Length: 366
Image 1 (cartoon, rainbow, N blue to C red):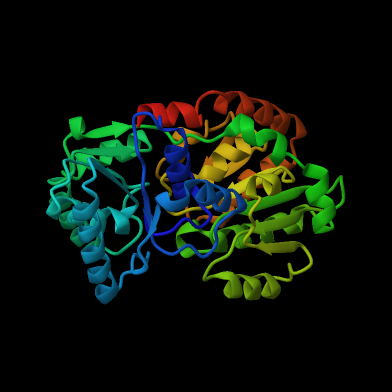
Image 2: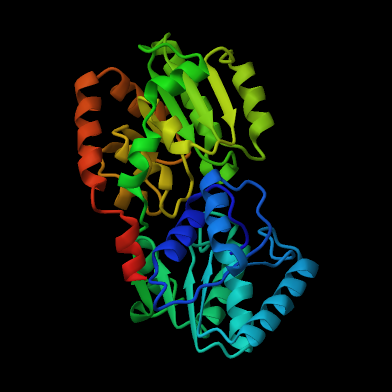
């Protein structure tokens, strides 16, 4: 994969490597440079030791020169190591890795796209190009692992892969293992200067257009007018950071918002929220949604991608249309004004994820 920065995809890679039977599999992890490794990822990389292979030119952004060098590097690596299986993750590493593995005559090639780029990310022309590329790459792919039923259906609907070539394996997390370390509601609130009884509406994601943080800020304008004591927290970093800060200031919400930047302890931060918001325009799974429910935090999220398979609408959270800050605000306001409903969703969320999105089960299916 291209990098092991904070996010759901690196967690899946880490957990897969960790839980696969070492008596059956001799694993090498091939990755590009990682800039924002979490403490957990650093420990994991330390445990992997010499089994981690860094390919310097394997980067997330498209760069024809570096991509070609990465392709050649991967081809040489696969020829030298004679792997029985190559398992690629995410779009960019998936394209270069599968091409290199096919050229190197690797017997088995598996791909986990972690969502797809068939629609929602780019314009119609580039999306059509991506479809053509994926149809070509699927010919040299033995099996595709979809993280949601929607993703699996889309592979068939867009004529990218036959149903029998796509396995549905839900994302697994170390939910119970993390629980004792994650829950620290009062500690986080003290750290952020929040009062114990203040209502907190938070978002935890990359600050990029596809994640919709701008709609969260616009929704906050409506919430702030109706609920004077509510505070808003944004956990994450990205290209929109500066413009979001300017927008918050222009709306007169500077005293109501806390932007923490990139954090290593996302689930711990979520435990301090009363409501988690995810305003994505497209989303494969949304790891924070699973973490929030495990922490008993009700969710307001957009009805896109695989989110409806992770959130039980009306039971563990509320789903709304994407790019609609007014509807987003109405859903948040409804939960803020109904303590009983939030409590019911809190309990339902914990029960819903229990045993359903577990690391060991995911690795066993892989």
